[in-house]
Image 1: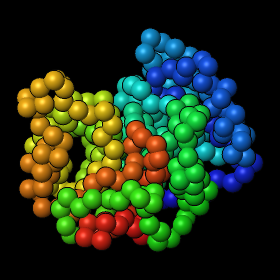
Image 2 (image 1 turned 180 degrees about the vertical axis):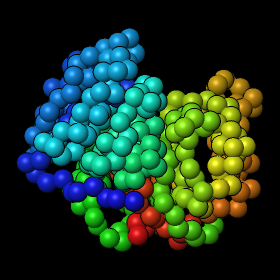
Image 3 (image 1 turned 90 degrees about the vertical axis):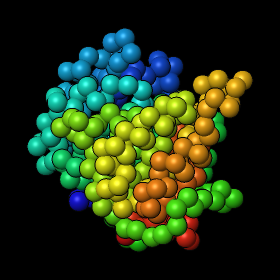
Image 4 (image 1 turned 30 degrees about the vertical axis):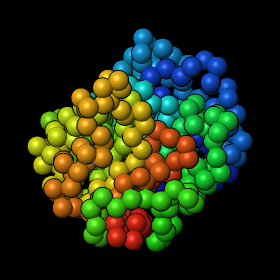
Length: 309
């Protein structure tokens, strides 16, 4: 697994949306934030396009991803937001060309579809990170989140460092034990949607990271069950659970008609016997850590630590 060249101040960042449209009022703020970090910015056409719930038609979004990787003047690529639509462009990507031009590629949520493909089929590390038109411009964007993001993209070749929660926000052991493997995964919906496609996630011997937002507990149960039936949970060497933002019962007035997320995890994940860490500060939340997807990590659920090897 190759690690892209570290970014440095003065480098040029391509801003794209492979998914949903960028709110018009958010774009100039997002550009300003990236420039404030010391980067030059090339704004992709998809950041200003709308095709219903998509940031332009599929061919435009795919062509822009291809062009950003092919352009030698672009040093890194930040997805400006998530939403929906990244899976639709996968067949249109020039994966052989992208494989030959690895660059820092950052984003999360719907971007999970691209992370899986770039890790598995293009053989380079990508970054599950906050994004310019969502987290970057929020007034509550915090030092922990900035530090985690910048240290990841400015020091891509760091050896042997720990992925730590903010002080006072401790990880939780769901299943004790220790395991090592390549870090894969992302948003549960996108991971599940990959099944049965040419872009299906490979979890064999790997550390599977999962997070989610705005799904009823029954939906989380359904998707985890699908991963289990597909063998993806049993294949994994270990599991990391991030944020489960606004994932609650469908009928809040009758919680007895639902199951707590903790119960779902205990009934579906615990029987795998794999080391599992919960409450890792990563996902649709602030603060949030940046994860180097594709790097080899060791999780120690006994000591509640995650180390990048």
